[in-house]
Image 1: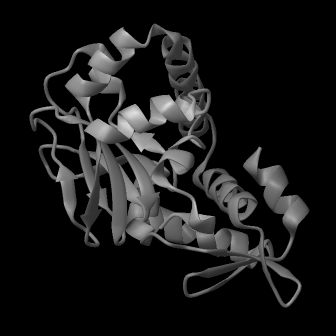
Image 2: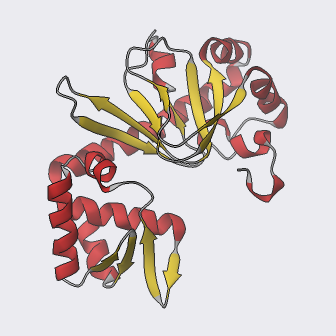
Length: 232
């Protein structure tokens, strides 16, 4: 869960939101927070639930999504290691969660109660600017994602996702760059703003053009330059 024998306090210091806090401040946060374990596909909260606080992923992956009245799923974000989620409603004054959150695999989350955290920021105003910086960074990332969804077609979005996942892992097998899908194609389709059938056609297009080779959940990158060009 926590690599290199790092404590929870040292681990959450790696998060942009808390990176400027000293160990004393981090200990204060840990005192009113808790670690929660979840099974795969377990619900963390649903849209409309009373807002309790926000979370940081210490292990696993979490899907944040909306459901239409017809049951269609739109994936807002896929939260990975050391990423926070559900923190924005706290500072917007929401009393309910505006979306759903569900684990994609066995997960361990660091839960920070909203009211306690607000009290902590009031009593420690020196961290306020860092929190604003963290929100600005997240807003920028979400803005870039919206631009990608609206201005590029599905093969380009898929190429961008593969490049981003490779940049995180840098896995290589038999001299070929490799990305392993850790989420279902249905979830990936929702994340890329499309449907499973269209995503399958995008995979086939990149495969037929010798850009990638797909074997189950393994995606081998054959033409790295072409894939990166498509991702831009």
